Image (cartoon, rainbow, N blue to C red; front, side, top):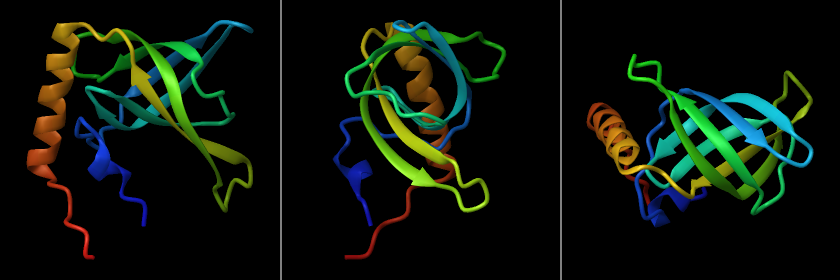
Length: 126
């Protein structure tokens, strides 16, 4: 089992929120939702692979009435998988924030803390 979560500098929480990704060349808007979120970045599932190190603009809507968070980001990893019912490949994709504002970082920290208090991560057996 992959234990990458244990090597992250910032904890992530499973917290679905709406995400708009904007990429340039060619210009495209991609709508999805987060698989997980942390102050370092987000994990999303996309219907197409985006190249590593591609810079994208992110807009996250936590649907908490406060407004969306906007930040630039960079694709840092992508893993292809197929959902049995769909048969179309999907790509689990990690996006690192590159210019997250301090107030947005604090907001995400509070959300992650709230989720982790309600649902603490399970310890893995060796």
